[in-house]
Length: 369
Image (cartoon, rainbow, N blue to C red; front, side, top):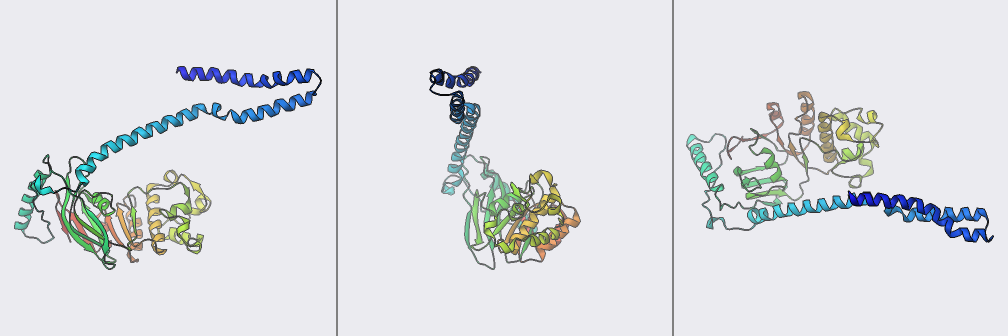
């Protein structure tokens, strides 16, 4: 409070003093007859112009102080995050020989059609693994993400066990193994909290706390569609090109007629006309409904695919805000492409647009159908 009060007093005196200071400096010359009144006014005006530019720091001192305080708070926030992450790095991502500290039971997965005896064995191992996982000395390994899969099988998962990346290290999925060929469409189903979205994060390389290996094709170009699409600041064209920019495309690929066709395919015909063209800039997350934003995300995916920028898609409840007819419309678009995609969803109607089903059935259990 006191420093702002003193600053206000100083700036008030400063603003008045600078008005009369040039008059006092030039007045003796004027009264001696060396200059005329017009020259006096010119000198006063020139002085004020120069001083006005030099006084920028003083006028903006409050805003500079606020900016400095914001930088300090952000710096403290980053230091806090680093302090929290470093212990996790040592615990979860360090190269540790697990066998020395904890008894690790080799996990066992279940496939659709497995016998009751296998299921019972699986349940016993699950409880034992969880008991080990919650021991004080348990240290999960790290999931390897390798770009060495063949082009015809762009995704191969080998004995992957996934944990939450926190101190509790809760096991979500264990010993998961499957592969996807080109044009395969996999649907993930299961109750909330079973690890469906977490599995997508692992496939994207965001979570690597666990064991096993994920093989992806080196030429696989993936796009992630979340439940709440991100609307970048920019024009409608920028929304359709995201996460790419116009520099990633040939000019002939993103003309208005093509964008019109893409929007019509997802049921957003007339969107450009509604906002005054593709160069219109809006806060799109505010002016578009959730359903329109999700359809816009599918339009992004289709445009990116048609321009050769995407061959693999991860859809995390990407159609949850759409009605059944709109959902059918966008998924039928995907079916007509050669895209390989993995979807997370709760509606049973989605299953018809997928060739395979991965069901997360219980505590770490899964079934591939």
